[in-house]
Image 1 (cartoon, each protein chain N blue to C red):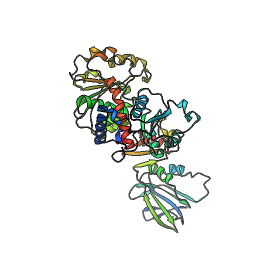
Image 2: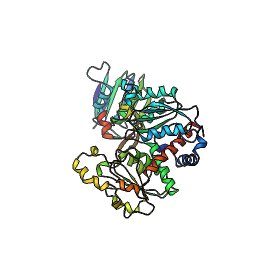
Image 3: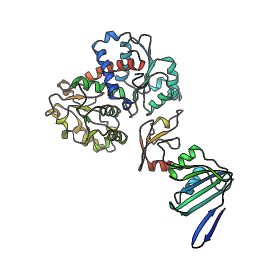
Image 4: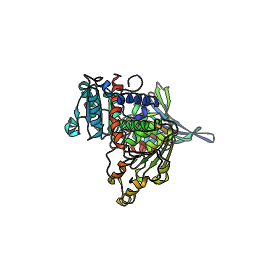
Length: 161
Length: 308
């Protein structure tokens, strides 16, 4: 899937287009393997997948790119990727064309993807609710549990993803 | 407080200064003439869902509803409810929706307010949730301050003791920061400082607060001191407890240089953090404070039921 070719002195990396699926572009260099983990892509994944690590990028100098044939991301996967690979772009491909492009920016609220660290929070009990956090600071990342008001730091979130 | 407030009360953060003042106006009317309100809740039922033991909060809610002419049902510990069978709080609330017109929930878990918001069709009041908040205690504390000083704006208040695990502390702080020029002094051992989420909210509100371990650094400047119990089991190192316990004990000697109008409040129960000899001094207000709980809770029930 990945061809490496040269034009003049500059090396250009070309990754074959996919007909239908998702392309995650501008992934921070080295993070694409974590992206695979989040999306549950391993050696048994039955569809075509392309991964390019540390390819040249005008904006980022280097970046990772992932292409997955026939895959549409769930909202939970997108939420999780936002924290694994912030500012990546998710491109939905149909008939070789990008029909939707979204930049993953840290939202103001996050639900379900992580648990509250407070063992006494009702979201950790047998209740018909899902965890929910307000993001009160994006840099550094700080979350506040909507239920029990407990604060979570960014590294706590990263450890749970 | 339909219309001007919210249907439930689980945090004082959601109350405006005007909400609190409106509540206190009604509280004062009730206190001055309780007989007038003696049938306002006739035919109404208060459900008391106490998953955790309580003396003052439960009894004062019961007293409040009975004084309003209403009736009471409920349980006084998890053992008496289907919680022991694994029933969720959400299901308990869905059930009580049909059995009562208003309910009080005390629970050892935190975040019950959000569950109430999602599953309750009747007004639900927190009777204290975990270490999170105890809003009705804070309202009666605030009412006690208002009665004493005729205002809250400009007061210099000290908080002493276990500021980390005491659930009345966040609720009272969140109420006080709605007022103007209130100075807050947080006096505790380092291990029992207010939690970061509470301090974060004080910072967000740009409130004027001081953190210290030394009571005498601020005592002479205070209008009121809010004393809480220090629990030995909260200390990681027992030596720390032994070192600090006496420095947070109030005796008549402690109070030699306080302002003339200074008062001491305590949410109770007290153990030994205020010596019995202090009870006789002009500064003690903790028993009057407990009495105010009934009037404030009567007003709150009326507001939430919309039967003013």
